[in-house]
Each structure stands twice: as C-alpha cells, then as structure tokens.
Amino acid sequence: MIIYNDKEKAIAAVKEDGGRLQYASDDLKNNKEVVLAAVNQYGGALRFASEELRNDKEFVLAAVKQNCDAIQYASYELRNDKEFILAAVKKSGWALEFASADLSNNKEVVLAAVKEHGWVLQFASDDLRNNPEVVLAAVKERASALYCASDDLRNDKEFVLSAVKERASALYCASDDLRNDKEVVLAAVKERASALYCASDDLRNDKEFVIAAVKQNGDALQYASEELQESLRRFNNENI
Image 1 (cartoon, rainbow, N blue to C red):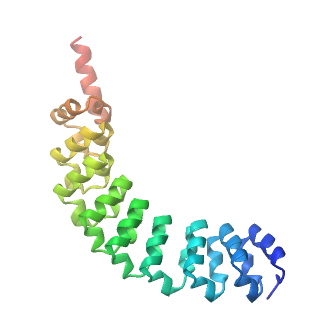
Image 2 (tube, rainbow, N blue to C red; image 1 turned 45 degrees about the horizontal axis):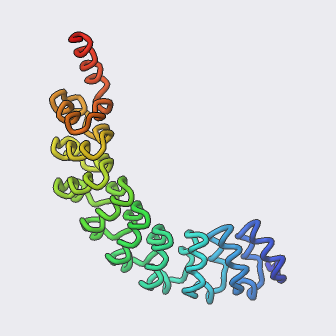
Image 3 (cartoon, rainbow, N blue to C red; image 1 turned 180 degrees about the horizontal axis):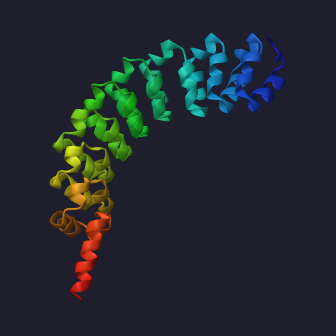
C-alpha cells in the first residue's frame, strides 16, 4: 500500500515515524534524503529502503552514523566488506554484531570495534575472544569487557594481572580462582582501592590480607567485609 508519493510529505511523515517509509513509493524508497530522515528516527527503517540504497556503501555508512541499528539491514555484500565494516565499527563498535562471520574473526576489524566500545567483544569470534591483545584493548576501553573474554583468559593469571593493572575493576570479571588470588587482588587494589570489593569473600574477610591491601592503598579498608571492618573498629577503640 502506497500512501506517500510526495517527497516533502514523505519526509515529514518519516521524521515522526521512520517505519512509515514502508508506505512510500518505490522512487521515494530510493531517495537518499527521504531514507536518511527515516533512519534518523528509526534505524530499522533501512530495511524498507531500495535494494540499491541498502547496497550503497557511502549511503549506508551515512545511515549508520545517524543510527547504528541501521547496519543490520545493509546488504550481506556490505556486511562482508572489510572496508565498509571497518568504517562502520569506527563510527559505532556495535556494528560488529552484524558483520559477517569472517569479519568477526578479523583481528583488525575487531580491534577497531573494541577500541570504540569494549563490550562488543561479545560479538567477536571465539578465537579473538581468546586473543590477549584483542581482549586487553577491550578492557582498556571498558573494564567489564573482560566478562566477554574466553574462560581460559579470565582464568589466566598472567593475563588478568596485566588487565587489572590497566583497569582495576576488571577483577570483578576474572575467574573465581583469580578473585581469590592474593597477588592478583593486591595488584588491582594498588591501582584502585575499591577493587578489594571485587575480591572473593574469603579475602575480604582475611585480616592479614586486608592489612596488606591497606598498606598498598590506604583507602582499601572500607571495601573489606563488614564483619572485618567492625572487628578492626572494635580493636582500635579498645586500644585508644
């Protein structure tokens, strides 16, 4: 059903609801100004654009710049085009979600994406989620990106040490074993006192360890277990 044949009326309509592009004439679905106005309001409107526009590299990049959701409706040829996906993920790392399987396994593409937003590591291939260089780049951008790494890396002491030295709060996403590792936790606390809160309950309640952590960072005590904090307060009061 065609409702919009007039360009100006179509633009006014899609600015209110991008999905109205589906009711535009074929000529207007192939009109860049009309389609961009629709995509700006609703990224999914790109699916109603002409096949020609959905396969137009320059145009789809402009659409993705306005609304990153649009990329899912780009042609498969574009989503498998390295140059296009590289440009897209540099505008919005989330574009990686809709890249082809080959490109989600491309180190250059994934590095560019995680540097824009660390959490998109979840859309990388299994091999790259196990790649120390890629994962560390993601963690540098967003500490919690470590959660998206392979189990092997999250349990790799050497790697996690390097990660918490970059972003101390990445400790929260390390394996349970490493959150209970004194060397790893102390390295994190040295960078940021609140990292102690990410340690295992056992370490947060370990008096000797917490004292060592406080020596690393004087603000760490407030992140020990409440039980241990109360115990130390009582000790201090009794010895005043």
